[in-house]
Length: 216
Ligand SMILES: CC(C)(COP(=O)(O)OP(=O)(O)OC[C@H]1O[C@@H](n2cnc3c(N)ncnc32)[C@H](O)[C@@H]1OP(=O)(O)O)[C@@H](O)C(=O)NCCC(=O)NCCS
Image 1 (tube, rainbow, N blue to C red):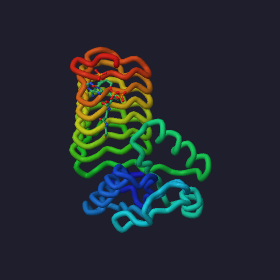
Image 2 (cartoon, helix red, strand yellow):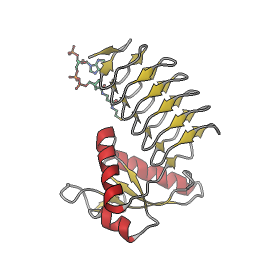
Image 3 (cartoon, protein in one colour):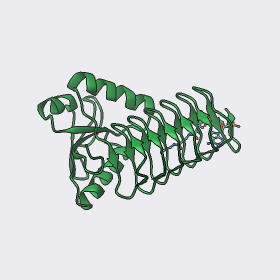
Image 4 (cartoon, rainbow, N blue to C red):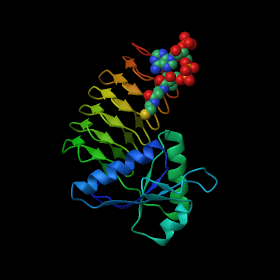
């Protein structure tokens, strides 16, 4: 699958991130590649309008996926644990296939690896030998230097900057504008606050914030 030409996509989640992903798909299509948001999907009991920006909001994601094997899913939930739960559910219920999305204005070096279901928004740069796991979210304007590794379900808010050799473990989250000094580790499920400057390793599950970042 070509992440710059994802084809027909069902976007799970119809909130702000869902609308941003719709725009990514429309920008990919405008660049002349195959990309279409067929529908948004939400859980049956969830409040949502019937249409968002001209796209229908459905409540039968699993049935849609079972009926149409060409359809791929993007999960538009910013919270890593919520995203992981939905990915597991749609895979189990409907054998879901997940699209990987690269905005046409994202800059990726040719040695960058990116896993299934991950999304890289425009104006982010991933330079040399960066490894991105599955279902990772890289919001606009992130700078990820050489040899960084982002584990599955990691989430970078806009304008996160990472020096070389940083390792972000499974499901860790970095808030808007957070920065990380070279070769540090951000532990599994950790939270780095908006605007933080990380200068030491962050333990699994810890929340840190501030300049320099300290545990809250
Ligand atoms: C770090 C964070 C997770 C803490 O959230 P929280 O556990 O609810 O913490 P609280 O809001 O109760 O604040 C606890 C203390 O930490 C301070 N604090 C919170 N966030 C901070 C931050 N980013 N930088 C510095 N200090 C911060 C608060 O001022 C407060 O200090 P006090 O006890 O002296 O009053 C959150 O503030 C944050 O930065 N989230 C990232 C949001 C973001 O970027 N989202 C991306 C959307 S795309």
